[in-house]
Amino acid sequence: MHILKYIFVPWMIILVYTFFSGILGQNGFYARTHLESERLHLLENHRDLERAGKDFINTRESLIYDRDVLSVYARQLGFGRSDEEFVRIMGLGIATNSDLSAGQVLYSSAPVFVSDRTIKIIAALLGFAILVFFLIMDFFPSKENRY
Image (cartoon, rainbow, N blue to C red):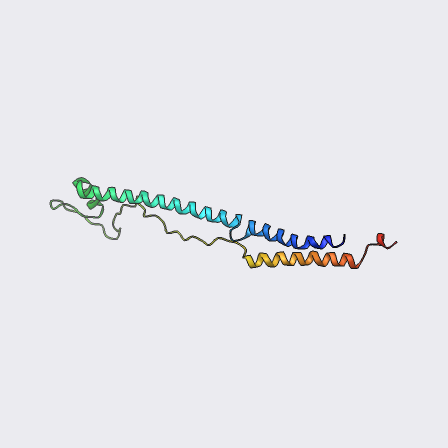
């Protein structure tokens, strides 16, 4: 009957390895939630870029085909018609249309996980600790069994 508890040790190693791999491993729950949040962040940035691209295309079309829009943009940049005169105030810079953004640069971070080697070491150490505990318990029998 004493030998049956030693069969528990390899099963405990497998159980600990499986648990830590499923939670903290490379394909574990924690790494997958991190990757999912990165994917959602990238999708949102992609939608923003598509919106900005459509706005730029509409602005380009307006500048090509609408003379009034072209006149407004030219005035924002400091240009005028041949029959107009301007008083320029120096040092203020040019007015730009800042309503449109071209998106933002995203740097995706690597998922955080515990390496498989580390998980194997933890499982082996725990199994070894359980084995040592069982050996000590067999080597030093309790006082109840002595009599």
